[in-house]
Image (cartoon, rainbow, N blue to C red; front, side):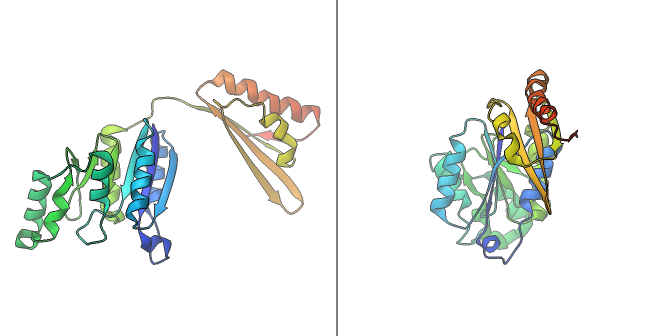
Length: 244
């Protein structure tokens, strides 16, 4: 699966608030053996939201966590845009979501708060442990949570535990640190096939230059084969290295 996060909030981009969503979601994914494909932090712009949702929808293996914009104020666009992109603009008042809002706020649920139960058709709910105004998800892949970490974090855990508890595909990784510039090993890097994940991280400490090379794949034999190319080159060039 390819995991995406979309964090909506002009207040993050203009510095009025700091984001806490990415780090929490990223840690939860890593703990389950998943990784982010991409993360977007965007302003409250309907066209931008629509284009990013469409981009993610076009990935047949996408799973999206969206944060923000599902409240009751005029700048909360997420429900409408989600419906436009994922359910052909079809929406309905979700009876359970409506019931939760009424139970929480009584007569103060009207006329505005009740609109938070107007969701894309066939939406399923995510529990809000703070005030019972539910988040929601579509097609078991696209999750929409509030902008408040105190509300969204438990929803992330609920969604992952229910639908993406653990990645059962095991990946192997080989890593070394070579005492040479990154440029020295580019010719070997070009030999690595695209089905192996290659990471090259240069380290510069004063005049000392090192590079960390890491290969990852579902095939242990495959990464061992190509990892050996780096080792052979370093030995031949009498370059010191250390395997992590």
